[in-house]
Amino acid sequence: MTKYFTMILLVLMPILVLAESVNDEFRQQHENSPYYQRAIDRGFTDYTWISGLADDYKAVGDKVLKTWMIVVDSDCGQYYQAIQKVEPYVVYLGTRGFYDACRVHPENRVLILSDDNAGVKKGQRINRKSYYVYQGLLDVKDSHGFPTKLPVLKQVLANKDPSLEKR
Image (cartoon, rainbow, N blue to C red; front, top):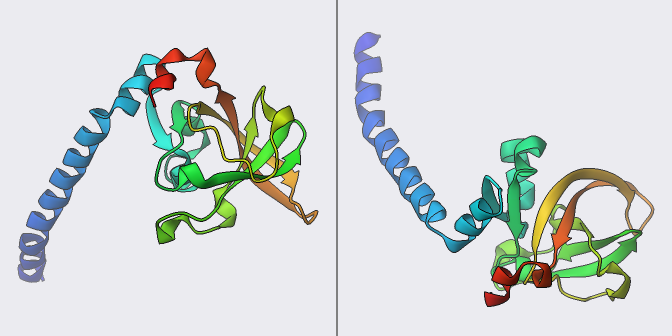
């Protein structure tokens, strides 16, 4: 039995070492990005893309996500559109995009709390020059009247943060 265990361990060890080095390389690239530096400069512990919010919520949870800066990515995030008003929020849905991963999915809905919400029209795209702060989950009724929990993001407008004008 120990002979087989040793053989398995000898096969798996290089794979585990390789996986760890790839993870370290990814982390290094992540920490060298301008978004990470902006997040740290503003007192956040990390940043994430709005289109990955549902996955990040599952991975790190509510408490950690509240310490991250959320930015609109140019892959899927830029396709988020206003679909419904639930005062004082606007519901945005990640719609189509260049990649298959951008397809419409219920997890791609967020509630945005902003000073701009009064002027938002249906179909209007999310503000890419802003960043967002996760506030938690909120029970709301969707457009068909069914209860659902959606993440609430507070928008920090670009004109209140001049460094975002460069995007």
